[in-house]
Length: 109
Ligand SMILES: [Zn+2]
Image (tube, helix red, strand yellow):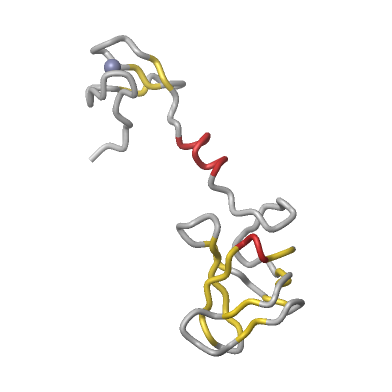
């Protein structure tokens, strides 16, 4: 299957790429892939708005209870090598050998 996006105007699947943008022959619409603007909104950011990336080290800025356990991640805990998830507000990490999902708003690079 091709990964050419459907026309955003008429949802036709007859769209094609002309080298710079996508063209819809059915309604004449010209459009760019909207992935970029979406990605811009989905960038995981820490509490200061800094972009987070795979492998970043962060510090927890608040005592956090871990769901489903009695464990508490103390404020100031350093977390190494975070992993981004499909959800921009959450990152995976390992603390004391356990896999834990942290909210990015409680993290600081
Ligand atoms: Zn169209």
